Amino acid sequence: MATTTFPTILGMGGATRLTSGFLKPQVIARNPLSKAMALGNGGRVTCFQRDWLRRDFNVIGFGLIGWLAPSSIPAIDGKSLTGLFFDSIGTELAHFPTPPALTSQFWLWLVLWHLGLFISLTFGQIGFKGRTEEYF
Image (cartoon, rainbow, N blue to C red; front, side, top):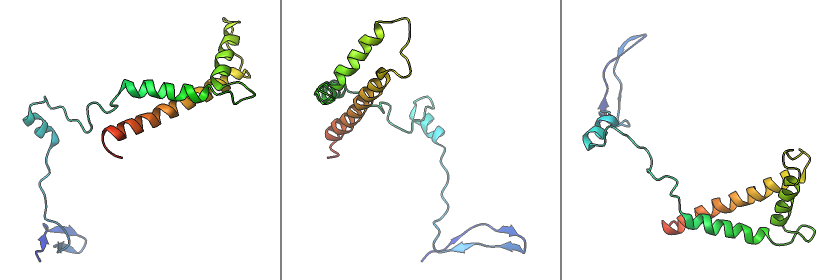
């Protein structure tokens, strides 16, 4: 078994030498900037894929349809979440220059509808990209 020897370290009691069979030998640190310059990309270092969002309009379309279908089911006193949200938009536009009051139902339907939409889009992105990149 090879042992690794490190340079002398000055401590309180004098000079000591550190040796261990468990430590790997020293490795020369490489500068990523010099590697990027050698590759000829102008010194630009990227740590992630350039298209990290991997935007796909199929996900947006299917995600929107996937949210509009269940949110249009009349489940809240015989009305759908989409219907309640659009009705509240119409009610608030009736007195347009005045903004909606903080106690208006508009804010509740706005937050719930968009929260469901964003969750649907997020799961759609995970599912669609997971399928195309063969994660599952």
